[in-house]
Length: 257
Image 1: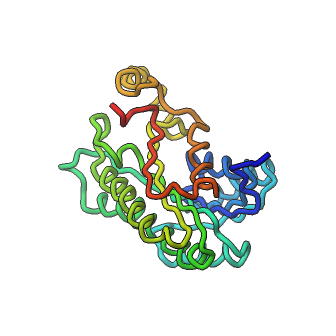
Image 2: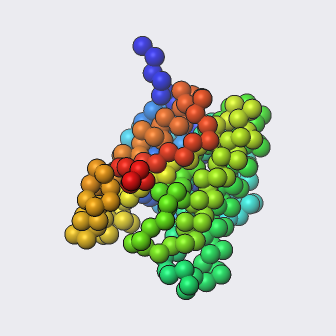
């Protein structure tokens, strides 16, 4: 019997892996046997995540502190990963931020910070991993985490820099997919909708959001922990070899209406 989604021996770098969706996706890949390189800015959080991944899934974990806005730190992550594992099969670009304010009040600094982390940071990681690992290996899976807000606008949380950055991530992924497909590298985007995380629970579990979800999301609820896992596993696996340049919403149908 063939296991289409077996990732034993593969190595995945997951950015923004100190909590939330990053940790959920790292666990999903570890569950398939993938070794994990979790990166984020807080080393103490990374150590906690690393211990949990090792203890629960028995995979090898190499936590590395990294700020994705720093080219030097990004290059260091790739160097250390290649020295330790000798390969990088998967990159999940999940690091991001979000400035919420009316567009007319957004400062230059807020807009620039959004672009540096969400868009330029995504590019820096993809560039380094492709150049030093995936292009030489003629194989790779890059999954960039955007958002439904990279596909549509919204009327509940003014965040125009976030829309701009995540929309950029979607089309950056298409550009890289077109450029690197000849190397056996696929580049795809996941666009999550409203998902439960420890940071979003106080918003999503309110009466007003429950009512909003019933009006705007066809499945009438937010996404639960684990409901992003299958998309991440599929796009990370060798089985997705002919899926390239796709922006996949995982949003309960929010963007279809």
